[in-house]
Image (tube, rainbow, N blue to C red):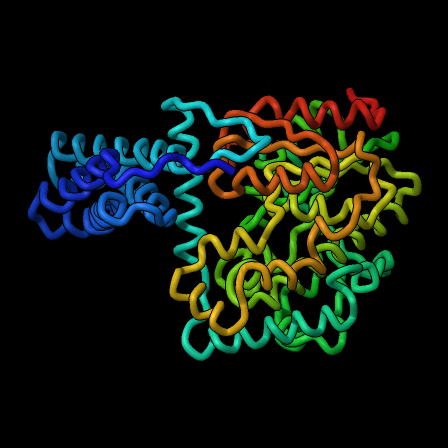
Amino acid sequence: MEHPKPRQWDPLSWVPIIAGLYWLLAHDGAGWLLFAVLPGALMLAAGVSLLVTPGDPRTISLMAVGALLGMLLTLPAWMLSDLGTAFFAGLGSFASFLAAGRASIRRAPLYLGATAPEISTRMDIKVAFDETVLGYFVGAARVPSGAEALRACEDTLRMDDALRGQGWDRDPASLHAAPAAPEETYVDRGRIYGAEFEILRFDSGYVPPAGLPNAAVWKSHVNNAECHVRILRHAGRPRPWLLCIHGYRMGAPWMDLNLFSPRWLHQKLGLNIIQPVLPLHGPRSSGWRSGDHYLDGDLTELVYAESQALWDLRRTLAWLRSNEPGARVGVYGISLGGYNAALLSGYDKELDFVVAGIPVIDLAQALWSVAPPAHRHYYAEHGLDEDRYRNVLRAVSPLTRAPLVDRERLFIVAATGDRIVVPDHPLQLSRHWDVPVQWYQGSHLSIRSEHEVRDTLKLAMSRASWALE
């Protein structure tokens, strides 16, 4: 990859500095300060950091978070001040939001084989939304501290030794045994976005292998023991099934079904949709937020989370095929779902196609790049660096096993301006699968509105000889 030429001073830093100061000083009322302190402090701090200590990617994420908060709080601010004050506060916030997007694009390295992002106001907005979500992910993540940090290092090293001892870092096939179809299932019904859907529930049945550290802790996530699968199907003749795998921190119907557009896939194209909820997400959560304990916290939990995700996806497919022999199934995953779609391709040869959308592939890089510097130094001193992270995760990596699906039916779609899953991730999968990446000029969050995504899905269905309405 090629890094941009460094700058000692970034003139864009003055935009959030001025906007942050305006928020904090424009009005002296206590009510105003209550609304102004968070966006003002975030923009001011991020701007100063970008000016005097450039280089930390978290700075731009905090700038975007502060700017978006400022835009959202403009209306309440107007009620506490006057139109002019609120207008300039909102204008400064919007300018800071654009500056965050432009600064992010300028500082992002260019990867060999990736299409460069365009420079435009539209792209600035898309990228700034990515930075906002990244700021939320990083700011809200549970980071082990104190004695927990040492324990996390020790547990991860024990996990590494155990996986190596079984040879699962080189050949994880025996770690991921094929599950049987569930014998007992329960069905509820729901309705959202004008579409009725079934909610299939059954016991996951996943049990961590004996001898791996923290297996008892994983079993303590009680809600996680039951699988939840949403189903949208047509009556009458058999139709192809699209297995849709959601992303990190999702798992609620209003998010997942909106992301995969049932109006287009189910109603217009006439597909049946089957949508499992990933472990620790949605109704399977083990924290106050969907996805807690999956990517944040102890690395041993990530090994179990991905092992169970693969198990649950295969168990869901076993249920489908036992109830509809000969079912035609394609897979479409987005973000973390793209990771699991790619992982599934190495364990199921009966899939008609696999589309990995904006797939995070190198979880070690993704986690290590946003870890606080003090934690990275501490972990490294105790034998846990990025390479050790990566080796531990080889047992659940899509890059460890070759896909069982023909390369003509493997597809990757990715964003040129993605700041959550940087282009190196889809490029790694592209080299592993030996297929090209379909790039679109957008960001991680703009995937639903990009025409290249629909074009790729249509091409995948065409190559699978699906008859569409």
